[in-house]
Amino acid sequence: MKMRFAITILLLFFVSTFVKAQYTVHKMINVGYVYQNQSFGEVGGKLMFLKNDDVIYRLGASALMGSANSDFAIMPKLQADVLFNFEKNVDFYHSYYFLAGVEGTNKYVAPKIGVTLFGILDLTGGYAFPIGNSGLNGKELKGVNVNFTLNIPTSFLHDMLK
Image 1 (cartoon, rainbow, N blue to C red):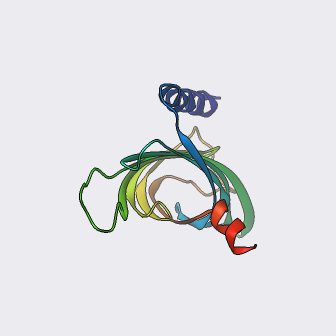
Image 2 (spheres, helix red, strand yellow):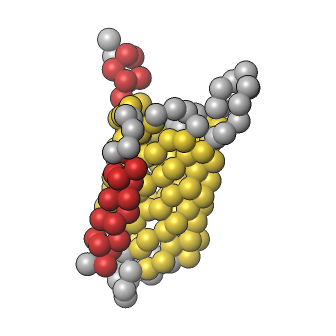
């Protein structure tokens, strides 16, 4: 219940910032690897909101799939990221961004920081805080959190399949 409340407040915060200006929305499919005291594969989708390319907001939902204590498990994951790059007058415009965000599952919440290349290839790290006494198949999910994600824009897929 506390997790739902925290995610609702976080989403309301991000949505309230979007009301002030006209943002362009891009859809992406993401696949990746997550280490959280256990290895997980990740598949999901993200929405990227941008007005200019200095600050970009992303909201996403995905499924973490892996084996915990020899049993296959799937966890839902919600995430919110802000990408920053204020560098001006460069030849290769905004090739990298600094990333700050938070991700949450029904088992833990993890603030994270990292870098992203073109907003497509992410490498982030953080620390997960467990929610209550919940674990995954008896495995406690707390501590260092590492994510490696590939975000594929759906417009790119649409153009490739023409």
